[in-house]
Amino acid sequence: MALSDADVQKQIKHMMAFIEQEANEKAEEIDAKAEEEFNLEKGRLVQHQRLKIMDYYERKEKSVELQKKIQSSNMLNQARLKALKVREDYVRDVLDEARQKLKEIVKDESRYAEILHKLIIQGLLQLLESHVLLRVREKDQRLIQSILPNVTEEYKKICGKEIVLKIDTETFLSAETCGGIELLSQRGKIKIINTLESRLELIASQLVPEIRIALFGRNPNRKFND
Image (cartoon, rainbow, N blue to C red; front, side, top):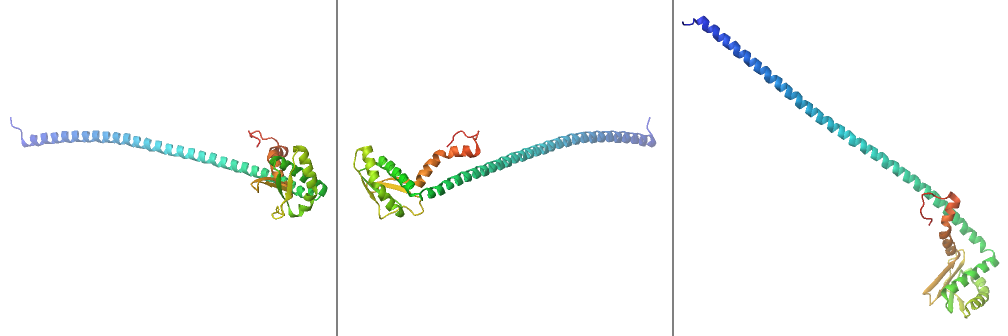
């Protein structure tokens, strides 16, 4: 039995409604899946960026902490260096004071003559030469000339040998020198420096550790005392 035009139109509309409904459901399904994938990707990206930010600030925090430690260490080292400089300056002041006292000693001619006598004998026993040139301060020439007989006599008693001592009248020790003497032999190739400053420096190099301990106490962190 043939369908009427009205029935045909009705079936067509029914089919179109069904197709449209299927299309809408499919579109909703696609939208839902796209939304789910979007949310998953968004979550992944957010988590990735969050981890990057956390890592950045963690490294930043470590860098700041390291800078604090370096700055603290530098400040501590600077404080230690300042303390050491103050101590060394104080020790130097003690030695400078000792040098000033040397100038006072030489003003006592009898005491200074005794010191010169010992310094010359000491130098002669180091040289063990038969001819020695004595270099002195220009103003000490007379004093040293007066003690030379006793010096040669004592040297002869000690070594059993004669010695010829001569004062250098061409070259003198600096007038700024506190005093003392230089002994030369072999035409100046061998020289013994026995000035008061040189003796003070020698003694100071040996006593500075003890001076430090006397002034500041023993340093528990110091392994060596030189």
